[in-house]
Image 1 (cartoon, rainbow, N blue to C red):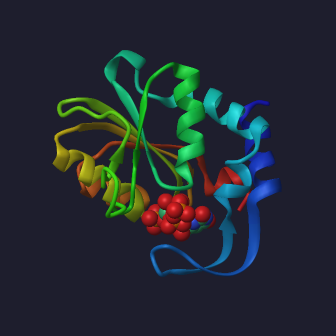
Image 2 (image 1 turned 135 degrees about the horizontal axis):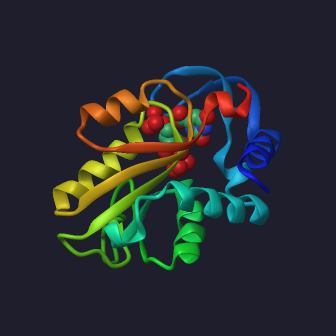
Image 3 (image 1 turned 135 degrees about the vertical axis):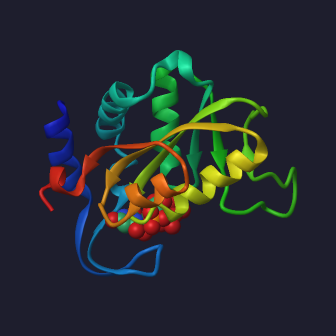
Length: 174
Ligand SMILES: O=P(O)(O)OC[C@H]1O[C@H](OP(=O)(O)OP(=O)(O)O)[C@H](O)[C@@H]1O
Ligand SMILES: O=C(O)c1cc(=O)[nH]c(=O)[nH]1
C-alpha cells in the first residue's frame, strides 16, 4: 500500500459523518475514528512504513512517546519497525500501583519523538509534550497521523515544538 492507498483505506474504514463533540469541545460534522484504523494490521503496518519516512533521522532521538489511548497502537508498531523503545503517556496517574504518568522506561535528558493519532487543536498532544518537557525530556518533534487543520500547527509552533503530519484533511478528501 502506498501513501495514497493508505489515505484512501483510512477514509474508507474510519471516516464518520454525523454530529460529534470533539476533545476540544468543538462540534464537527465528521469524525475520523482512530480506533477504526489503529486496530487493523494492514493499516498499522503501512502507517509504520509511511511514518518512518517522515521521522527525524533515527540517530537524532532515543525513544518514541505515545499518548494514551489512540496513539498507543500506532506508536508500538512504529517502534517495532524502527527498533526504538517507546514510552506511554497517561492522561492522569492511576492513583495506585506505581502511580506513574509515563509508563515504560524514560530518562531525563532523552530525546523523544511524540506520535499523535489525530491533531485537531493539538491540545492533547501538547499536554503530553509539555509534561514530557517538564520532566526533562527534549521533544524533537510531534508527528500526527491526521491533521484536521483546525489550529494544531499554529498551537504547536506557539508552544515552541516542531511538528509534521502524515496526512492532512485534504489528503483524505475531506
Ligand atoms: O488535537 P486535539 O484538539 O487535542 O484533539 C485530538 C485529540 O483528541 C483525541 O483523543 P481523545 O481525547 O479522544 O482520547 P483517546 O485517545 O484516549 O480516545 C485524539 O486522539 C487526539 O488525541
Ligand atoms: O478532535 C477530536 O477529538 C477528534 C477528532 C477526530 O476526527 N477523531 C478523533 O478521534 N478525535
